[in-house]
Length: 270
Length: 265
Image (tube, rainbow over all chains, first blue to last red):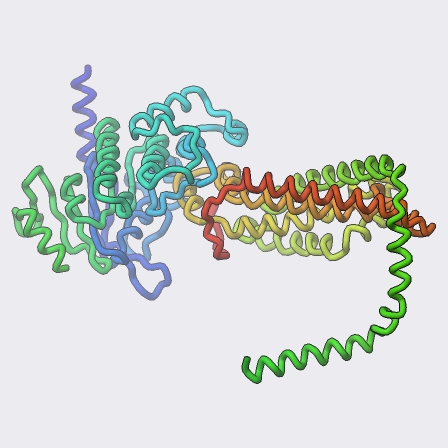
């Protein structure tokens, strides 16, 4: 019985969760932020998107959760068009854990209230208005806080927390969504390297425990190679490279195997 | 100091002189009349302290009126400010609503008090209605401005989770604009106490009723007692609101730049 469950899981995991074909996007109809990007993210992958600032990485994530629409090409999330106008997608949006670069936490609210925002689509209007949280959601919240390592700080106001703790709250809020996927935009870029790795480990653990797909944007190629099993490099709105990472081995899908040094060299040149 | 500035200052001074002639400013009359002020001042120092009790109770009534008016006004303002915020509402709602709110602020509360005396008769209730109306006009304006200035990031992040509009208001808009709200309420209460102190002049309750009547009958010794009580009350409220401000209004850093961006809900 248990084996059957696992095998059915693995058959799902071969399916794509995010697909992009020939996608271009712009904010002002003049300058394209993304040019003809094609990518395919399989379920269960830890996918990293790397690039310098202004290369269009954040736009990629906003296309995936329907916060933006492409000007050309096709974006599919779970075989649906991501748009807030699309009714069938609107149901799945509550299960897309999205962490913007600014985190988007409500500073004057407690950690508990902030992470409950992730559960609000499951709580009815009256109860959510008076902050009457169902018992199972409170239990879930404590489990999630334990998982991200800030269980003792549920009643703290968010503005009192450190940078690393704020990121843990944002992760917890995303996990409260019971997500299928985690989209995180440069979540550790502003942290020192020790704290950055702590936060990355939290995500990595959660991902393994909950069988999540993660698409994470990074500034730092080393970090991407360390945690992801697939890395796409974006430069000036174009995808210039996509590599697979299996332990020490790195596979370029155009040229074959590469060493980590070669990748870093290529990345630094670009 | 460049010539342009000198010219500007010259023009302003000229305008002050011309308009002064226009409205009949007479500095000589002021100096000739100064001895009268001395007489009043002398009479005022002859306190009739036995009136302090009346003064105290009427001041208490004044503060109660201001309190009720402030709270009722704020309660009405909160939902109104949501409808008047440009980033939450449609043009067809916020334009007329803002015009209406501006109208309530146009006239000082004493004029509204006269109106409400006609409607509900003499007494504190008319004053409370006037204070409430003025508070609605004022707090709504301050509140919709602070809603328009809130941090857009949490709005974007929570929209991407798929919250309903009501949930977004409850969990993001209200908490993000709340720190301003508390200081606005304190400021408004402070202001309303001063306003309510003079509403008695038109018979709308409060300590002003006594002050105006004793002035009419030249009983400056009594007037002085009432004015001192007002002064003491205002000082105490001022002190208390500073304490409350320090204790509860956190120094959370807010982006103060006003950027109007339509929130997609």
